[in-house]
Image (tube, rainbow, N blue to C red; front, side, top):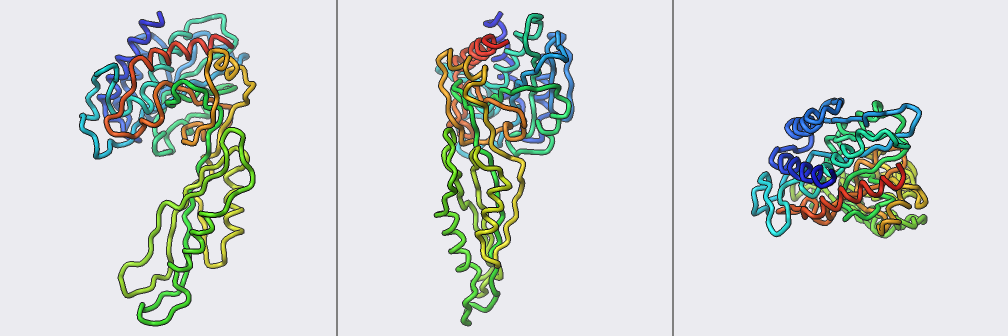
Length: 354
């Protein structure tokens, strides 16, 4: 049964790759996912482009495991030499946009859910959620349907981890920082140049180290990633704007980091967070699902990349076939054997606890 389900999952991935599904434009891929459940007479729910389904013998008195991955993609970058919407296999690699991030994970989790769907002897319920808008952290993705998901005790979020166990994930805090100054003609003296004022602020972000380090995620990382000021050569601008990307470990909440930054800034600096909800995520090392994976030879680590874990309040584990370093790359691919291993390991890890 597992081999047949895996073959069908790989067929589904071909269809998903060949259907454009940029974030917020996932109508077509949502239909293919619906078809999977319709063909197997599995009842499902849908809101916007999110689809979810429960196991056949759902018991409200049992805890629920959420299996989640996304079916949206980024736009292909300019270095593609393949057609990003042409799914083809060459040298054991399945090529196509979204194959690795996170199509292989999604179809493997769908196959895993289907494998357990009719089981009566489970200690847990299952809910599978194939969700949208992960790549742009949009409002109509996983976050928008959490209110419908019943009694979730923990989640497996499908992202490419080479089927190793990402037991923690850094959160993301993006700050818009505006450094004020005095506008003037460039020919006249000005000791309040906003661009020069920005140098000290940039230096602070470069050199300041937050004290608390995490066993799995290391230190908080702050990086200035954008700068903008002025619109003509002979005018000193009134303000210089920078953007700061902060990757937050599990020792801090985003609100704490924001307060630390604000207190450190001089009066002429305004700091605005774009969002505070993309927090860090983790699951205890001694959680049964982690111990089950370790017992099968999997290793644990902390992930620096953001996923839909950031919107979950329950413990969550990031786990899936594929390699994160291939995500968003030109000529993206996943090995077909990685998908086969993924389905097999998902099932074995879950069998260890359910």
